[in-house]
Image (cartoon, rainbow over all chains, first blue to last red):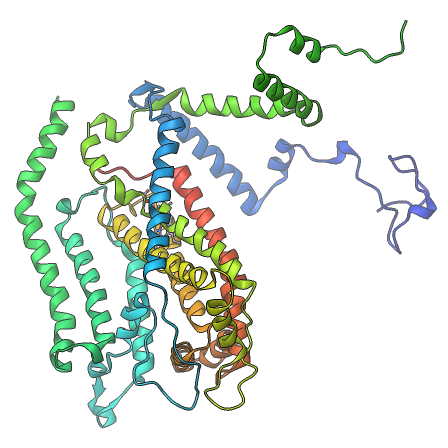
Length: 262
Length: 269
Ligand code: HEM
């Protein structure tokens, strides 16, 4: 590409300023750098598609803005200083204060050193992983297959892992399953009920994890682990359904006062 | 003609001609000194332009348009849970960095099974010998617990206010990753003191990893440094807890909050 004897734009090639082996180290002159529109024209394939899409989307944006009926308003807000700053400082110091207070009145427990040779009677993680630990104690409902002579298909550990995967999977999928623009639980009693079921399940699973401390027979605890969440969900659904009419009436009234029907 | 360099703008003379208090003079002198070297004015101008672009005219928000203020402010405390997670995270980071001066991630020193290891001893040292060490550890643990609690509750707030719907799906998924990493943070930290519960919690971790089909053994090697627990496990948990996770989680939180900034908070309907 580069002729070794041709002087370069930066004033010629100094033999001593060469890099090892390669052609002389020079910077391409400025007029060789493609401009933005040149790049766009030269681009092909995915890059071109990207440019095309960007242009479309910018046009769409402009159109939408042109026909928008948004109400504009002058600057009218909560001032950053001092109002917002003081409020944030207050919330932050209150929260930090509570942590420090709790840390000083409830110092952490410290146990015996690790001993690979003796399994403790009770193995427990911190409280926030109890639900996960509870999922590992689901062996009583690990299905047995008659064809396999009553053997389980997956080990109890794997069964627990699959339960974790299922829970995280469902949570991840929530935005793709529940669409629309409802924001309030009353508007979607079913989803609110599902949420309450999940919260109670997390709590009952935590209780299942610390079953040794629970003054309830294991079998009953196990049933409650699943019955309580369902009961909670049903009650939530019923309550929200009942509340709904009055609530929606209120909302609608406010809405139509501001936007009278044409 | 003098060769002496002339100031086009003699700021100092201007300064003298003003009738200023000592504070004002000091402030302006510093500002002029810095501006001559760093062109602060340019940046201020940029900031100002941006400020007015962003603030002069704003579309009336949904809350304003439908007069939902009362409902919104009533629920406001729940909207601070994300920020509280960050505050607790920062407190845990600071106290954790200080614990790091004294903690030693080593299982050396146990003559027989069940003897204290170097890691365990360093924790005992922190709690008994280091000034405020007991408090420091306590703060670190409680900050971690408050963070997890705040993250859980934040997720519930997002769920029950339907704030995850279009266009905020990406942030919801990022949130799921963040909560998983937060729990992993807690788990890896729990192993570090190498006490009985640490060891056996890690044991359950290894067993779970090994129970996974196909990638199980590989995962056990990667996370726990082998199939039986030992020095390798401790060091891996340590690196995870003090190096990998802090960077990853901090970056993800920055992206998460950045997206909230760009998209705005989902307002209640
Ligand atoms: C390390 C953990 C997390 C941190 C530090 C964090 C931080 C934040 C902050 C500061 C906000 C602004 C609004 C608010 O504070 O409520 C926010 C919003 C949001 N977060 Fe998180 N978050 C975390 C975990 C999660 C989790 C676990 C989820 C859900 C799975 C989630 C989903 C969302 C969504 C969808 C928004 C937008 C909400 C809206 O626009 O109203 N985040 N997050």
